[in-house]
Amino acid sequence: MVKVLLRREEVDPDNPDNDGQTPLSHAAGNGHEGVVKIILGREEVDPDKPDNDSQIPLLYAARNGYEGVVKALLGREEVDPDKRDMLGGTPLLTAAGNGHEGVVKILLRREEVDPDKPNKLGWTPLSLAAFNGHEEAVKILLGREEANPLRADVFGGTPLLYAAMSGHKGVAKILLGREEVNPDNPDEYGRTPLSRAAECGHEGVVKILLGREEVSPDKIDQCGQTPLSYAARNGHERVVALLQSHKVVSPPYDLGTRKRRRVE
Image 1: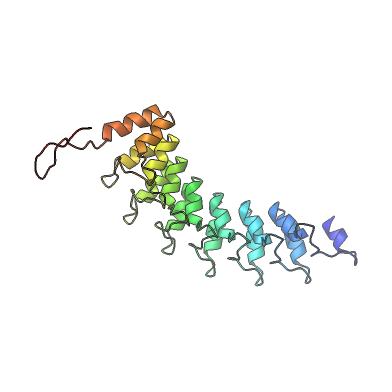
Image 2: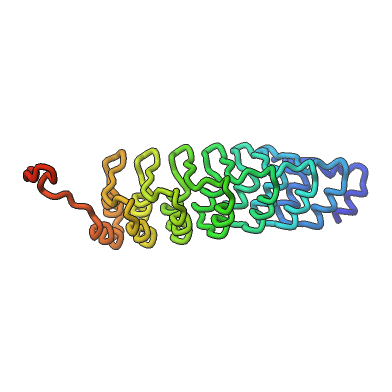
């Protein structure tokens, strides 16, 4: 049918709809590789044409994990494999965030693609993959020196903090395997990975974090709250028990003078 329509002179193969999406964009986003190749065969078609949200056909294909379509689009010189949309998202970021490892690998083969390029909120492909628990995508990205596991977004959140907040034990273990990752690093609100995991009741992640000497189970955030107070407020009994068993209790005397402190 597409071939029949394209034989008509009055048919514009690059005509956008009200959202700015072209036929190529629709075909790419739905994984119709054969249609994509047919449309790309027309000289008047711009393979990198953005829609009203500045999203190009490659981004739509990457978001949905259509490897064949991604390869076909990348075969055109006009296509920018690292082009941002209106929110600063790139094809790599959206592919990583959705766990499409094959597409991530394809995009990372291109020199123009920055593995650590953030969107306007500071989210990188690694932080988004960590937040959504995509272990393989996280491993692939960490295989690139440019992907910084310490990079924080505009709120101070790191990949580890988001993995902890979402309860992704596997991703947390991978990130904690990196020497440069501080397991107790707080965001701009003073919330640590342990605090976020405790608030959400992620027992497995809490256990992993409490196994690290650098992690302070009593660390107070900017609101004066501890991981224990967040867990207790939300009724996470097992997490409360874990934290209490690791809770640092200050002695009733000053270790320097050996004088007893007043107990209020």
